Image 1 (cartoon, helix red, strand yellow):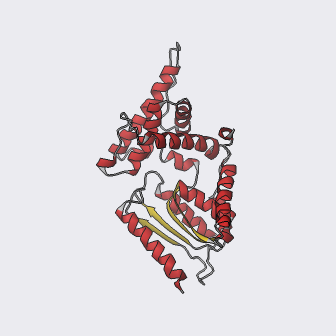
Image 2 (cartoon, one colour):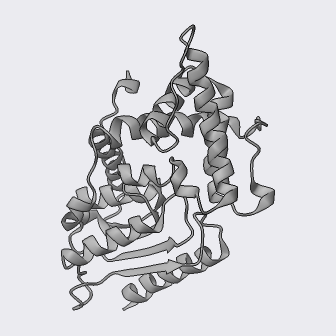
Image 3 (tube, one colour):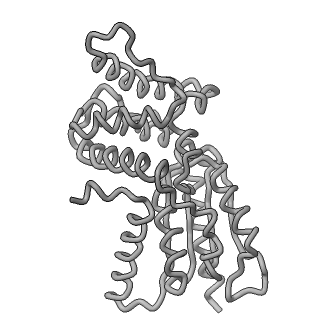
Length: 275
C-alpha cells in the first residue's frame, strides 16, 4: 500500500529512477534538468544520483526539504512584518485550533496550539486532510496560493471552495503534509551534504528575494555549499562555475521579473553550449 512508503530518501530515489527510465526509453544521451519549488528538490536529487545523465541544472525557488524551511512558512513569527500574510497564517492556525477544541471532548482545558509549532500544526492538518475535511484541505491550499500570489485577483478565499481547483488542492495538501511530516522530520534527504555528488554539472539559479514559499535563505545556503566543494563544469576552466541570480520577484515563475531571469539563464546556457 503506497500510503505507507514515506521515507523521503526512498521516495526521491524512486522518482529519480522513474526519470532515468524515461530518459533511457526516449534514447536521450543526456538532458537539461529544470526544476522549480519542490521541483528544485527533485531536480537536485536526480542530478546527484545520475550526474552523467545531466547536461546542466536550471533551478528556480530553491527548496531543500529541511525543517528550517518549514518553520519559515508554517510558523506565525515568519509573517510578523507582513500584515496581509500574517492574517492568512492566522486563518490557517484558527482552523487547526478549532479542530483541537472539537477533539477535546469533556476535558476542561483543550490543547492550546503554539502558533510557532509548525510540526504540531502540520500534524493536526494531516489528520483533518486524511479524513477528507474539505475546509481544512482548502484552507491549506489557499494559504500557500496566497503566499505565492501578490495579485489581488489571484488571491483565494479560504472560506469559499472553488470546485474546479479542489482536486488539485486535495492532492497537494495530502502529499505535502505526509511527505514533510514523515520525511523532513524523520528521514531528511540532507541535500546540502550531498552537493559534491553534482560532479561537473553547470548550474544556473533564479531566486526571488520576496519568495515566501521558498525563502531566499535556502538558495544562499545552496550557493555557499556549491562554492565549498569547488563546483566546476567541463566547458570552463573556472573552478567555481555557478550562475545564481537573486532578483526582485516572488515565488511564481509568471512573475515578470522571474520570467526575465529564467529566459536569461536559458540564453546563458545556450551561449555556453553554442560553441
